[in-house]
Image 1: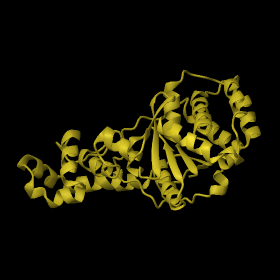
Image 2 (image 1 turned 90 degrees about the vertical axis):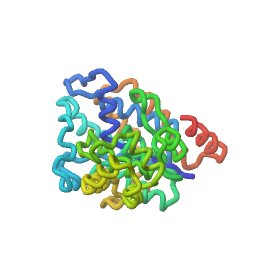
Image 3 (image 1 turned 135 degrees about the vertical axis):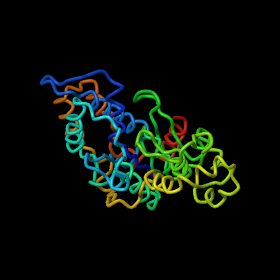
Image 4 (image 1 turned 30 degrees about the vertical axis):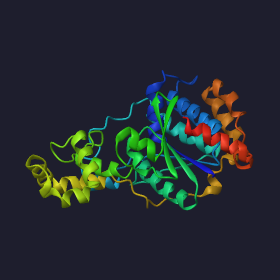
Length: 309
């Protein structure tokens, strides 16, 4: 089965920024986040050998969720001054390397990833989302997996449906219902007052989903049922905010996402300009096109390695 890797650009850039010490070009431009991003990208290409690669980014403008709830992400800290210019450097490097990347006003990277994941499933691709954002676990199914960094930008854990259930005791789709009940402090929206993670998980194990839970609200203990009743509208809003859309106005064009089309010379020139000497040697290890033409045995071995990540 052909593979598509989708990188959650902002999540990985932020992770790289905090994982690595400050780095600068000779002219003084900060580069540690860009370096960490490409270090991970090169490793993903070498280890997974995907046929296709796409990077998705947030836009700085408010999204439709802000229109739904004015407090959405209101407490998010401002992006660090030495990280802001690195976003432009990263976009420039991706353009030079001819690596497909998307960002759309009004939508988060999550929504673009959700939409592209749906489209890739329709084309029967195996999709691997690379992100540190656990919200994206709701997208996991038999064709979509999440590869999440757990230690800096080196150690990774692969989440398929079974791994999600083992780790969190929930099916991927239940993550939306879970957020509806507990809210999300990082995105600054409430769920049901007084309903914590343990209670939310127990309720979903028994009633399966948000809608069914509310149908059986009369069966619940008074202290739980009354909280759900009082905050019903708030919880319904939280569910809408938590739900990743899969119909954003983005179209996956596989021809433009082929890893065999990555421009090594363009990437090399950017690495030279940025002073990424240790990454330059790794460019030559990219076997552009090998992922498309490799033997069945190689594909089988690669899939086995992926399962062990």
